[in-house]
Length: 263
Image (cartoon, rainbow, N blue to C red; front, side, top):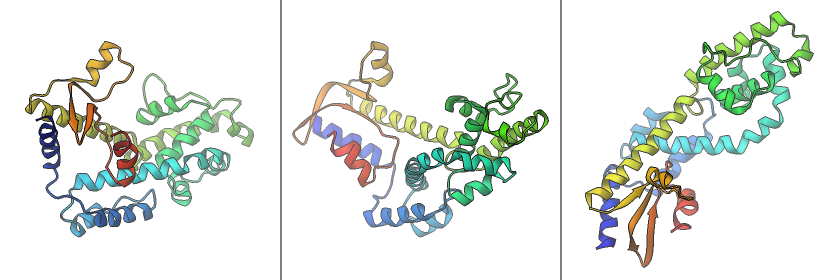
């Protein structure tokens, strides 16, 4: 009975996607995204026509995952070379031109520039990107004296103009960057929460008793999966105590790292 119940859960989730994806289709879609420059919008309309059996949600999920992997692979390189990138920006080169030239997301690149020039931490930059003209003054009024920018002949007046330019650029990159902006990050979080709700609804539909991540945190649990079953179930001879809903596309790599190894 327990095994049949889990199958019911799987059916409920899979039915949201009307067609199973073939591995060959996935590999073709993935190759489009891996070859795409990071500041180019993904050709979703063309892919929808080429792969009518795949949902737009599935295509965006694959794109987001490949985009994030590319950022993680190259981020350290740009952290180490921030001095040269900062110099280009201070010399007046547009942030989009630099981003296009080095093939790194404009939003992430501006984060690194703001951190370096204004001597602020990563958390503060996130708030500055979202609200550059915040009345509480997230941006400083002047460039810090120990900033490398001050050694390039930057006076107080030019420093204030630089800060205003950064504010404008924050608005520009957030509005334009389709892979690394705060809006993109928020949509990924919301997608993850949506599928957690689907999992919980599927469990309730079959009458399974469980505790949610919120319940477990309230209890002070050290580990908080999305769902902990009050009565374990058996699947293929293995005892299942909890279920995690991953906010990512289950490609072969994710299946191996987050699926089969844990199972």
